[in-house]
Length: 440
Image (tube, rainbow, N blue to C red):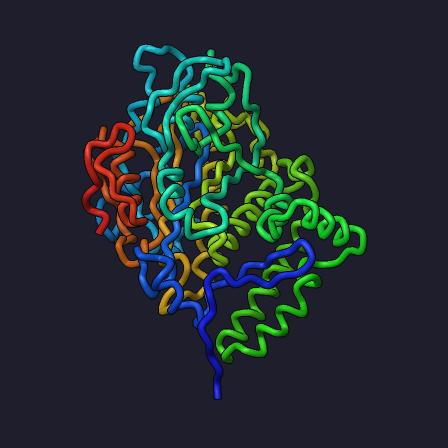
C-alpha cells in the first residue's frame, strides 16, 4: 500500500553547507494551493527569456503562412518534434531600440530595451539609465514565494563599464535584466558557480567549507545530504520515491558534466559552446524544477558578439557576418549560426518537456520567450523581430501557431500579457499600448 504525507514546498535535503531543494512531489500539491495563488493546487507558472544577438536571417525564420498548419522554415527545423509547444510571433517591435535622435548604437539599445521597452540613456559613464525589465517586474511579485527572485544566466561575462557601442556603456550590451532604471543584474556564466549557488545553504562560511571539502575529497553534493534523503524517502509514496530517485540521479549526472566541462574560459567555440549553452539550460530547468526560482533570463551571447562558430564551419565573427550586404554566402553562414542556436533551444525545451508535472509536463507550466532585439543584422532594424513563444502558460496559452501581428505592435504588449498570467496586473510597461491579443 502506497504512503503519502503532506510536504512543505520549501522542504530541502540538508547537510553541511548544503540545501538540496526538491522537485515537485505529489505530497507538495496541497501546500502549493496556499503558496501559488496564480496556480492554486497546481504546479507554479514559470517565465524565462532567452536572447540571441545580431538578429537572424529573417527569410529562413519566418513561416510563409499563418495559423496552425505552417511549414517549418529551415531555421526552425530543429523544433520539429516540438511544433505543438511553441508559436512564432511576427510583427512585434521594440521602438525604443531605435536611435530616436541618439545616433549609432543599435546593438547596445537592442539588448537594453528588449525587456524594458525604454530608451537607454546614451552614456559610457556611470550615469546609465534605462528601465525595469519584464523579468524583474515578475520577480518582484512571485519572488516572495521562492529562494531566489530570479536567475540571470549567460555564456559571456561582459564588462559593466566602458564604451562598447558608439558611446553606449558596456552595461547595456551585456545585461538584459534591470532591477531598476540604473541597476542591471549581472548574469552568471560559470556553470559550477550556478550549481553551487543553487545548492548552497546560504551561510557563506559553512557553504564555502562544504565546497572545499567536496573538491578536496572529490565528493558529490549528494554525499552531504545522503542521510536526510534516506529519511525522507522512507516516508514517501511509491510514485514520489521514484521521482526522488530520478531527480537525485539527474543532479549527479549534471554535477559530473559540469566538473568535466571546466571553467567558462575552457568552454570556448573550439571546445564546446553547445556544452556551455546546454549546461546553463539544464541549470535553469533544475532551478524551475526545484522551485528555487520561477523567473529566469539567459543571454546566449552579448549583443554585438563577434564570436566565431568555426565548429560548424563558420570561422568568421558573428557580428561581422551579420553585416552581410546581401552577400548570399554570408547569408548561408548566418543561417548556420541561427540553426545552431535553435538546436540549443530545442534541447532546453525537450528537457523541460521531459519532466512530468501533474497531468502534463513542466514545459506546459512555462512561458519561454526566445528572440533578438534586432531583426536583420545588416539593416539594424528593430521592427518585425524574430520572437518565439514556447510553453502553455499553465493552460493559458495555445501554442502551435504562426501569429502575425501588424508590424509595429509593441513587443512589450507580449510581456504585459505574460506578466498577467504570472499574477502581475499592470496597465502599462515601457512603451506598451495594451495586452497582446490572440495568444489563446
